[in-house]
Image 1: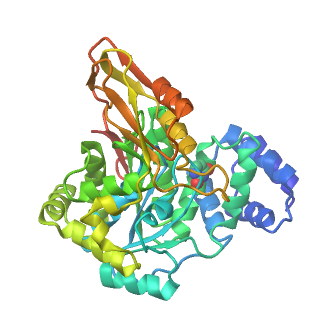
Image 2: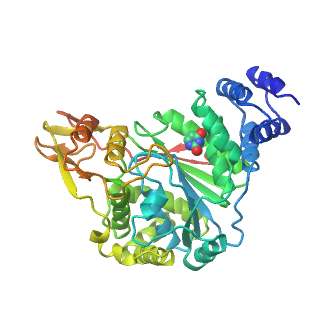
Length: 442
Ligand code: URA
């Protein structure tokens, strides 16, 4: 087999076989295929697409390029959740203990990541004493004992994806549905879950800005997961404004805790109940999503969810008293209020700009070696559809510096206040399941 022939085959819109796809991925991982040929092939895929079988074959080839996590020693059906990412997305921190409190085993492998705030691991480390350095055996034992444990990424998972994603980033080939879907799904499949619930974001602050693109990506990932024998479904949720009110590391953990106490923002709760009920059904801990939703709500009101969170924190060396006394979280020294300059209703909040503001305050990292601050960030006081008077506080900045004029200006730019009636946006647009085919509108 020669790479040049396979590039031409794809360029001409033909279908690649399983062995041809494995040849490409193995060759690239082993440095036998150079970047210039792989770039040409990725561009051919960008323009000519891949059919469902090619997409599944590509995903599997990337899974097989590295180690796979074996979670067979964890009792029960392991269901993982993945979000395509957005601003203020603290869902994992609230959702993991919530579903674990109903007996769903959550063996979560999380990353630090780049972006507006740290990843789930960074956020959890704002809890005094909490650590994620567990051996594989400790990790498995803790999931079996408490139904929940979180560990940093171990091993050499999907090296082909790592290499190809880096190449796509600089060759204009990121935005390709088969390449994105196989990239995300290969990482999920290599992490050893039996079932996968995907939260595909849509809107100005999301990777996919248009609902039609988000739907296409969701359908592609559900088809890949299903074809490869994993129960997979996707929820398409709104990212036209940040999720919840808090953006920042400790601030988001505090909001997730508030949600588990039944005191969190409505949108965070709704998203967790929607995603969580599908996870609970997949794990066979309820017979229907309605039954699961009711059980999740009961876990919040009875205190079962918050008790699971405390046990989980203690099991990983953390001080669980922070859950009862949120004032023990790291707190930024300066609070700066950004005020509304006109009266009306909030028409839009550009999530991207809010993310940039959080990053400028120090909440996120631009390169993997950057340090991040756990205490800084923003609290939104107004969301889309809220009425505002001139001088009302739109956002409070939690800052390490007394002045943050540049950040204030960005937040002002993020908000549009209009003199007209504005409805709050829809939170959940669609649910895509293997049997729904094209997905069904709720
Ligand atoms: N996230 C991923 O993991 N891969 C992509 O290709 C795009 C977003």
